[in-house]
Length: 116
Image 1 (cartoon, rainbow, N blue to C red):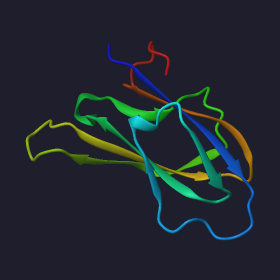
Image 2 (tube, helix red, strand yellow; image 1 turned 90 degrees about the horizontal axis):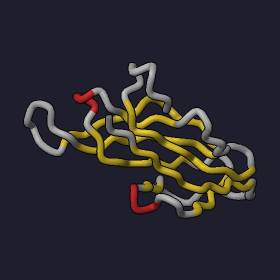
Image 3 (cartoon, one colour; image 1 turned 180 degrees about the horizontal axis):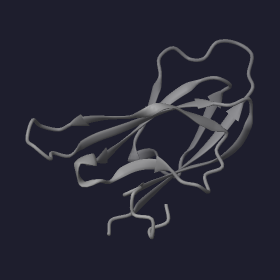
């Protein structure tokens, strides 16, 4: 069984003004880092993955980050080979304020005996 967990500490503050231009993308190298966000700001988390094996990155049940996932995850394969791994990207939007840790888990959601 493969199970990976990624924590990103998030601070979402209500700040007047526009969000920074562009959408920031976080990767595994950002695990454990603190990220400051403006209310309503969107960001992406891109991680290695291979959904053809049944494994996907999802928000863990005990994640307490003041963010909401926007849409479904997206996958871009590293090659045209059948079953190739690649990058899974999840998009999030900051809430109205607060702080917490975004906890993502890499697991097979259909395996009921394996808690996320």
